[in-house]
Length: 216
Image: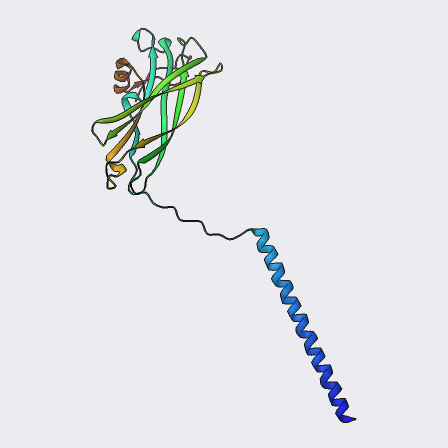
């Protein structure tokens, strides 16, 4: 009888231990399932890939000072009443990419501010600008012209942003972007270029009551 009691007690302990183990295992499975569900909701944790660096520096991109502004002057006389259409290349941001023996691709965003004075005859005007590739401080290798149509829609001023890209071949894999410059400017007359070189300019509101010529 005592042996039976001991056996029953041992069996009860065994059953209790097994049930506890099963309960603990179930809780662990539940926690694991909840953790996986939360991870699924958050999305996979993937580290971003490192960008492959360029084979060298980017070309220097700049606005040519002599062609940075466009000012039409009726009769060539620098007075606010004689101003027609005006424009200024306000800024440029640029980046490039090239690896191995690839050519250099230069991407640019160019910001223009445009205006119309009392001699402007229409709400619409198509400006013209160019992008040139040169050897650094040397000869022009290529030059391309672009049209910039602008609708002032009754306003005296307007802004426009142009996205452009140029591709520069490389003679060798050791040729870097540092050997080149990219220049940007308006198509201007010799008189306009001289006006720019002297530092004279009219604000975009030229022709309005408060507008006067300004010296840089």
